[in-house]
Amino acid sequence: MAVVFGDIGTSPLYTIREAFSGQYGLIADHDTVLGLLSMIFWSLMLVVALKYVTVILRADNEGEGGIMALMALAQRSLPKGSRAAYSIGIVGIFGAALFFGDGVITPAISVLAAVEGLDLVAPELHAWIVPVTVVVLATLFATQRHGTAMIGRYVFGPVAAAWFLVLAVIGVADIVREPEVLTAINPVWAVRFFADHSWGGIFILGAVILAVTGGEAIYTDLGRFGARPIRRAWYFFVLPALMLNYLGQGALVLENPEAARNPFYMGVPEWGLVPLILLSTAATVMASQAVITGGFSVARQAMQLGYIPRMTVRYFSGANRSQVYIPGINWAMMVIVLGLVLGFGSSSALASAYGVSMSMTMLIDTVLLAIVARALWPRWRLWVLPLCAVLLCIDLAFLTANFVKIPQGGWFAVALGIALFTMLRTWRRGRQLLRAEIQKEGIRIESFLSGLMLSPPVRVPGTAVFLTADKDVVPHALLHNLKHNKVLHEQNIFLNVVTLNIPYSHKRLIVERVGERFYRVVVRFGFMETPDVPLALMQTCDVSELCLDPMDTTYFVSRESIVASARRGMPIWRDKLFVLMHRNAAAASSYFRLPGNRLVELGTQVEI
Image 1 (tube, rainbow, N blue to C red):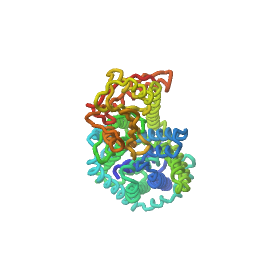
Image 2 (image 1 turned 45 degrees about the vertical axis):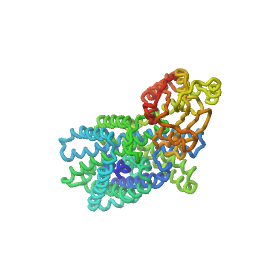
Image 3 (image 1 turned 135 degrees about the horizontal axis):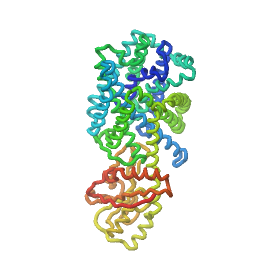
Image 4 (image 1 turned 120 degrees about the horizontal axis):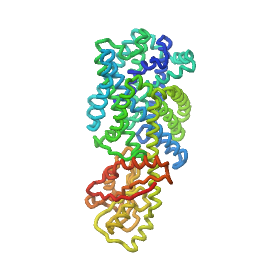
């Protein structure tokens, strides 16, 4: 409940309040309140319960979820290297970038909305809202490097249980006074709302989407918990608690229209206000932690699939690989989140920026789901594909409603998503160009070995492992070693590390003998695995004649120095961006866990 539903679980703090804010021009009368509640109910049922919890959780990529896993699953259903597969990759990466763009807003808007309850306790505390929010968020990001497994189990778990129970209790207490709100589950009220407000009524979906933000995060956390626990928690605990609270807020507004300015906090007695603010702040910290952890997971997947540079990754548990910490991602998210808090200053201002890119991500999820269902679900596609058509209409309605938010702050999430997408594609394309240049100047291994044996160099004891991006081309490190040291090791391995489009590799090693004491080794990792090369090479004795002594093995790595050129490849500004990203990428030695005392790095200059 804490990790999977932390994001969507804090939406009651601001959803109905924002629907009745001045930008939508709604009057808190009987029909409008019931129409709004009906839209929230059916959005939760159709978008979250049906689309994500019931259907998309079935689209597990070897047990893993998230938009990048769904993209890889959709690509595998298409011919490899086809234009369709390439297009799916573009769409999926754009969706992941947009998801991150809206994801960084979650900690800012959630904690701000919780701390803003101080306004109701004492209006003179208003000036402290932003500073307190900054302190809470900065502390949260600063503690990530220590790991959160113990805090998650013994703090976030109980906080989540208490939070959803309190949501339900507050909702029931308000519903008892105005039980008529229970009729809002009738979709006729939503239809009547649109009939009364004509086409202008669609823009209220820009506020309704706040109730379903976090749906994508449910799918992202599939690999940690599995579909069955997620479904049980949603249907039997989280969904009832959320709907009871939304209905309770609606009942409060029916009873007192003035409560629309903050129906979440005004629905509790004065003695319970301070404890509720404290619990809300704890719950929003929990939701923020879920977003941060999800950011680490998505970044690791993107790194393994070759869409972002290698970064330092730290693990807190040998048994649970989801307990990761990526310093670069953590500090980048902190800067963006604190910038949002200081720049927008209130949760109402941030709500205008929220939901724009999320609506695009939900639409992309629906498209990818339709592709997967058509290709891989022959028994279910007869009903999943028509469902996708209905969901596509809903996603388009949300997207249309959120377009009006772009001038009011939604531009930030879209701009951040586009910037991230540009960086992801630049890194991917730059790596392709770099590999092409190396291949152009490279020598085929077979030709090299046949020529080398005509006049063999001096052999020295031990094993040399040469990392190469292309298993058919002689690594530059080997050529430099022969040129400068004029020796060859007794045993030589051309090592190619491959990241697969599946979470976990079922066949780790492929070993091929290519010459006298020369071997070509391919090590295969899934995108959710840690690429530990020395550990993988220890298994060579199990699959071939090749055996390594770790204390008698030296690793040779080429470190390229990139020169940008306007005459080839990408536009010069993208070349320079790639050079900057390449310069700041983590060294292959640390990323592949190569022992520093057994490592030799040799540089080479490449123009792209």
